[in-house]
Amino acid sequence: MFQKISNFLRGISVNKYSGTGTVIAMVSFAIYLLFELLQITGLLKNAFIALIAYLAFPTLFFIGIILIISGWIILRKVQGKISDKILNRHLSASEIAPGIFGSKFSRTLFLAGIISIIFFVTATLRMLTYMDRTYFCGNACHTIMNPEWEVYQNSPHARVKCVDCHVGYGLQPLIESKINGMRQMILATFDAYSQPIPTPVHQLRPARETCEKCHWPSKFYGTKIKKKVHFKTDSVSTPVYTTLAIKIDEHSGTGKAGIHWHIAPENEIRYASVDDKRQDMIWVDVLQKDGSYKRFRNRRLPRHSPGETDSRILDCVDCHNRATHIYQDPQLAVDDAIQSGEIPSDLPYIKREAVAAILPIYPDKEMALNGISSHIQNFYRKELGSSVTARLEDLENTVKTLQEIYRVNIHPQMKIEWYSYPSLIGHKGDSGCFRCHNQNMTDSTGNHISYDCTLCHSILANEEDDPFKYLKPLKSSDEGLKDKNHKMHQYLQEEFLENLK
Ligand code: HEC
Ligand code: HEC
Ligand code: HEC
Ligand code: HEC
Ligand code: HEC
Image 1: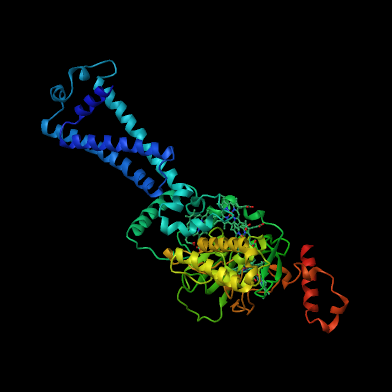
Image 2: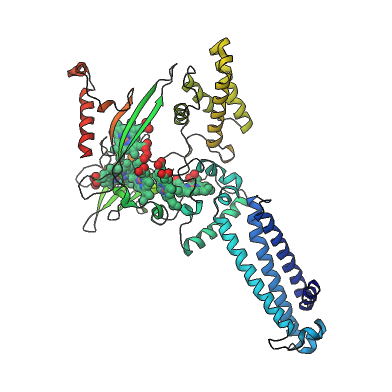
């Protein structure tokens, strides 16, 4: 068998071109098979090597085949028509003796052709599916994608593939993403990428083609109660509660529409912003029933501002920019850890000290781990005195938890620090919803886009000792002017109950 294959290979190597081609094709074929074996058995895990292997060996194989064919074409040019006489020089008589289905040589050639095509197609498909795998996306360009990979694994989409949001479905998105991928690989090779990766990401497919494949817009209903607990920085880290009933409905038929009204199929919101950060709005248009647009303009900007004509249709990502790459706020991350018990709430000043330990940006990982540990250990050795021995295990767990929070969120190699990627889902300062919902965005009659505190959520408690404070009956001592919040409580309670109807 081996003898036959080697005879055949020697036979097709008619000159230096096809000779080189045969060597290249055979070697790349063999290495590819070996690589696949390592890959399938799990012995090889490095995503970058896999990428190179999937790109390089089929390409080399292809070049080999082209060289073999060129060798034969050149032979034919030099010698005229390829006659039996020429074939005889390279192949044995038994191989070119004519049979029912052609000579042995032509049958082998046919078989080799089929094997090459199968090899080529399988290798390409393997490469494409491999590149779609989350592990590949998260690890091939380790330094660059590592931060997104880390925070993704803690997110609600940890089981959704990167490509489901970043590439979308269909042939055109696939081709575009591969071309874009090539560009990014070149940038990565020459370290010519920005750190951190700038947002908003402009190459994302429209959300209608990605998010909406899984989240069906007309299936958002009702109100979502969200209870948040924050801890104060006092000695006992007193918990305070904020509870919102978030109006996530999209329906506009009833006259009472909620947050997903923006993306209901019959609605369209488009906007122009000062720059591609999409932060400072110039105007916002709302599609009307008659097909025209109603415009709200930022009255603080001059009539003809730069960027005036570049508009974008609002979609999921304009609010859910951190749907899956959820970088935590250090205060809230500590709140969560205290709430879940990973950090014991009965350590004195634990909220204040835990935040103080993780807030500084340390030069490297090693120093961060040590810095966090020594901050906590030093403080509590002093604070607790001799009774510290009883709390050593608690301190150790606290340190571990804080180190983990730091590790996941801070990435010096990509210059990602606290607050590098803010979320747009709420209204920190004048960001998030308040980019449009503010008193400066006015229509032709001077009315602004509403920023009424109960437009988007009923407020059931705002930093109170009870998560449902405003729903509880007011005590008689609260009546009248004594409780200056009395009217507000009553208003919020009524608003919530009215909204439930
Ligand atoms: C649920 C959808 C979704 C999934 C799954 C997803 N991403 Fe993203 N990703 C986004 C969105 C949306 C943005 C845009 C954020 C913006 O424009 O502000 C983004 C942005 C990014 C960025 C730019 C930096 C940043 O944090 O905004 C990188 C890098 C990235 N994603 C990599 C990945 C990798 C790697 C995976 C898989 C491990 C992945 N993404 C999975 C939705 C997703
Ligand atoms: C392949 C399917 C898929 C795609 C694509 C997808 N999601 Fe999701 N999404 C999910 C799943 C599954 C969950 C988790 C549901 C759960 O845990 O209850 C989820 C949860 C969410 C949540 C709720 C998170 C929470 O805190 O409860 C939001 C918001 C969300 N997705 C937004 C998006 C946005 C925006 C996009 C597009 C950028 C997107 N999703 C793309 C499947 C998907
Ligand atoms: C105008 C801003 C905005 C837009 C646009 C928007 N959302 Fe939301 N979405 C929100 C807010 C605010 C919430 C509630 C936040 C929370 O749960 O913390 C939410 C909640 C959700 C949830 C969780 C619902 C639940 O029951 O827990 C999902 C899933 C979701 N959105 C998906 C989407 C998808 C998909 C799109 C695009 C088709 C989209 N959203 C467009 C603001 C928006
Ligand atoms: C790009 C601009 C823009 C952004 C960003 C935006 N909105 Fe809106 N929103 C509008 C406009 C415009 C209207 C309609 C105002 C009108 O017609 O009076 C609206 C209306 C609403 C309504 C009322 C719907 C109705 O018809 O009753 C709610 C609720 C709402 N937005 C919530 C949100 C929330 C929550 C966010 C942030 C997560 C947000 N919006 C972000 C532009 C925006
Ligand atoms: C355009 C919609 C909109 C308007 C108007 C609005 N909010 Fe909000 N608010 C949100 C959204 C969305 C969130 C984030 C919910 C989440 O965290 O998932 C939020 C969060 C909050 C929080 C919780 C912050 C935290 O994390 O502890 C408070 C408190 C709050 N809003 C109060 C107000 C007050 C007071 C007003 C009136 C000045 C107001 N909101 C107006 C949409 C709105």
